[in-house]
Image 1 (spheres, helix red, strand yellow):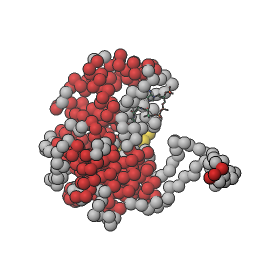
Image 2 (tube, helix red, strand yellow):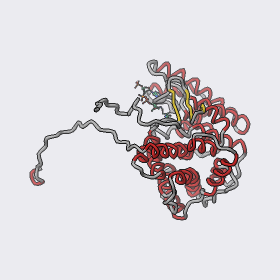
Image 3 (cartoon, rainbow, N blue to C red):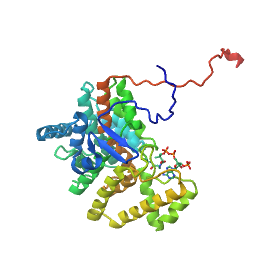
Image 4 (cartoon, protein in one colour):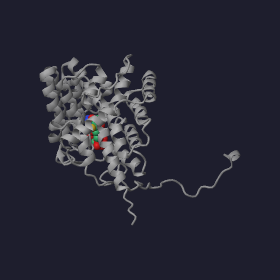
Length: 377
Ligand code: COA
């Protein structure tokens, strides 16, 4: 049967069966491997989350210990992979380009691993790539990963050289769990398409980094933070936002392709950020952000009455990551450090389904041209 329906952004096309996550854009609900995102974010370590995604159940204590040890033992990169990341940083590459180059060489020396092992290698090594890039860019030597720290704790340690506080680790873990998977978004679909050719998991994750890099996907939280700083300086959220909207600009951190109500991840990250700023940080900055959110949603309803526009995940991502001490330029790459858990799980699921993803294009070109010799053109 041939169906000629054309959906240029593949909207509403179902291209995979998945047990990994479900997004309900009308109700504003996200389920990850059976758990509402609020439940997962509040309780899981990142290691538990990736076990859940890879196995469709929670680990028992022995299984969790074994996974923690295995991931910790895989963190260090091959010397040549450190060289690639160092060259990227010294060449002025941005963090996402460096992550793409580092991801591509993440399994150097381990090319024969099974898909399940390659998934663990990719998840274990993404933080090492990002941290090595950052230290080099800052003029410092990369730090060797520490096997005694958790996945999230070790990432923070490799960035700063200091052992993070429990609140920082928990804050980062909440973020990593909240954004780990989100339906068939562009980077996840990319990963599945690559896996569908029976290619390998590291290739799938590397391609997905390329998709995540684009400003329509992973690039918004940096600009959200810039906006909050600018508003802090002017002291007048409403005037600032009105000026933006009147000149036709988009307000970063609002609107979504799927959600028509507030993104459920915004609530999770907002509570985490609030707890964090009240305990460890700057309560006034959080209060300013909450005021900006309220003002922006009111003004968006005024300027765009036909389109429901509410807060998306990136608004409080910027606040939480900034509070934890993740540099602004690493926000998108830190998204990748989380999402690689989802990409690898989708790759394994697609390998299992073993169905080549191969849509059709609608041909709109000519069909009856005759060849003109070069000297007559
Ligand atoms: N600020 C102001 N207006 C916005 C807006 C925003 N953040 N998001 C959408 N709109 C407006 C558009 O200008 C458009 O208005 P128009 O019909 O008068 O031209 C209308 O809403 C529909 O926009 P459209 O681009 O079709 O929606 P989309 O589903 O393709 O866009 C996003 C989704 C996320 C790309 C979009 O909302 C956006 O650019 N948001 C800001 C960037 C951001 O926060 N990205 C992170 C997403 S998690």
